[in-house]
Every structure is written in structure tokens, then in C-alpha cells.
Image (tube, rainbow, N blue to C red; front, side, top):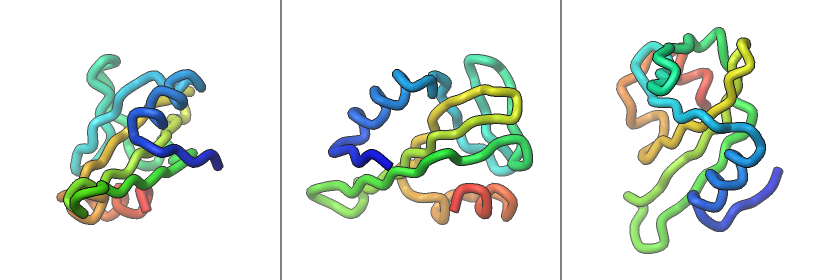
Amino acid sequence: MKNYDTLSEAINDLQGKGYTYDFNLKPECLECPSLKIEIRPEDFKVDKTYRFEGMSSTDDNSILYAISSKDGIKGLLVDAYGVYAENISEAMRKKLR
């Protein structure tokens, strides 16, 4: 797995590798606003996970997920606080561990 120094570097590189859609985390699924779809936990997999820690504060931590769906949609989810800080279903929590 490639290591990135910054979140923006990782996003740019992964977008070049086909992870072109942006996902939003919802309690029961991932939302892709540009395609106007929702993807349930059983319909996607996390290909790679990258963790970034803020230099000045632990509040600046973020996690980047490279995700692909069963339908071939590839995109990125940025979670600024970590999956445990979100109000999400157990199925989503397990999927994003």
C-alpha cells in the first residue's frame, strides 16, 4: 500500500486511479450525490484505508476510504473524525473498520 504525506496528495492520486466519485456517510449507507444514489453496506467494499493525523491537534485526524461498489462505481469517502464518532448503523460500522 502506498503511503501519502497529506490527505490532498492521496485524494489526487486515487482520483487518477479511477476513484472519481465523492461519497457521503449516512447512517445506513453511502450516498453519492453526483449520481443521486445510495449504496448499502452489502453492495460495496473498502479497497484501501488511509489515516492522517493532524500536526497541531488530534482533532485534525481524518480517514480516507477508497471504495468500490458491486456496480463498478469507485469513489472516496473522507471521514474527518473516524467511523466511531459517527451516528451510523452497526453494518456500516463493521464495513468501515
